[in-house]
Amino acid sequence: MLTLQQINSNKEAVIESLKIRNKDFSDIIQKVIETDEDRKKVQSELDNLLAESNSIAQKVGQLFKEGKAQEANEAKARAIELKDLTSELNESLKTVKSELTKLLSEIPNIPNKLVPSGKSDQDNFEIRAGGTKPELGENKLPHWDLAKKYDIIDFELGNKITGAGFPVYKGKGAKLQRALINFFLKEAEKQGYTEIMPPLMINEDSGFGTGQLPDKEGQMYKMPEDNLYMIPTAEVPVTNIYRDVILSEEDFPIKLTAYSACFRREAGSYGKEVRGLNRLHQFDKVEVVQIQHPEKSYQTLEEMVKYVESLIVKLELPYRIVRLCGGDLGFTSAMTYDFEVYSAAQEKWLEVSSVSNFETFQANRLKLRYKTKEDKKTQLAHTLNGSALALPRIVAALLENNQTKDGIKIPKALQEFTGFNLIN
RNA sequence: GGAGAGGUGUCCGAGUGGUUUAAGGAGCACGCUUGGAAAGCGUGUGUAUUGUUAAAGGUACCGGGGGUUCGAAUCCCUUCCUCUCCGCCA
Image (tube, rainbow, N blue to C red; front, side):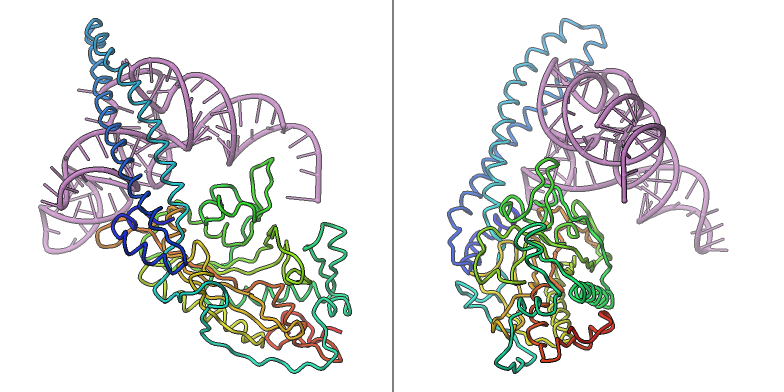
């Protein structure tokens, strides 16, 4: 959520910046400002009545103590009158506050100035690309066929046990998963990230903190009996470690990494898009999260981009990095880089990572703040995160790009983790 | 799942209806003292919101939500969490 301060003090600039998302928010922002005015009015009125009522209560106590029951009872009359007034005002305060929250939660994050304009992923701005697309022969196979040929991933078995989108990894397929997870965690550790193993279910407060709730409720699996949700990404439990926390400036940067299974309902997906490993209900991912001083967060974003890039380079996959345009930018993000690897048999670019700076947008919901050294004021911190990396599409590209007539070659960097260099 | 005990500020800890505007202690910050330090003494010490040039001041917050009362940390309801015992269990 944006803060009222952001909106009140820079109304025009906020409206202008949001235009890059191809939508006009001027009406809703105007409404926010008016509703906030109402809120202030109601609140100060209520506060005055409460102040009066407090002082009467104190006086009544005093009078009773002195044995002046008569006077005490007289004072009560006004207090009872005040009670009705305050409870009424309290109701309207609640109403106006929830109205305000509702309005605020409809406004997305303000895009960074570098975010290019555009409507869809067609308009994303390519930052750079690397690696080389392999030359595969005529009998190249897509990864779902390779998975079957070498018996390493069984999609039908997953259907039987759970349903579509829950594949079963077998033998070298399972080992490859584990190797990738270990490789990613090890690289993250080298970069100074502290490893976290988080809960895979979260409560409502956590879902709200990182912005999944209430808007994206349909995206998560829910356990209604216990009012918990399966995590769609480790970002949620890991970032929520710092919900309701006040840091000091020396604590920055906070660097955390976590492997977790991720669960997504992906309602409405169909067809070619979901074939094989392209889109799953359960998948594995290593996430990196940073909490940073506002002045350093963009420097950190670039650092994270370089880090994710280095992983893909080590896996020897052809890739490109794009900066998302306004139309494609996520609701909570101020700036996002997407990473795509080329999957040579499908002849498709697959998104394998998304690295974002949320600035104070999540921190405001999380109440994640820090105290400045100088004047000891509390201010919102910046949060960032990125996939490093999501496994299934990496696996798809590895299988397809490295297929040979002898089997599938494992990239060098991964071999110490797999313990083999060929799937055959 | 059953029975019981708890949840108070940065920490420890008192507080079962009215100067609690949360005692006391520790920690921390600043000042005094000192050649310097320790001890000692003094002052201050949360979050949010409102207000103001700035302040003073107001309001809310004693796990969360609701209620009783002129008045709630304190009484009632509800919910979450922690601990002890029992049951079940990888």
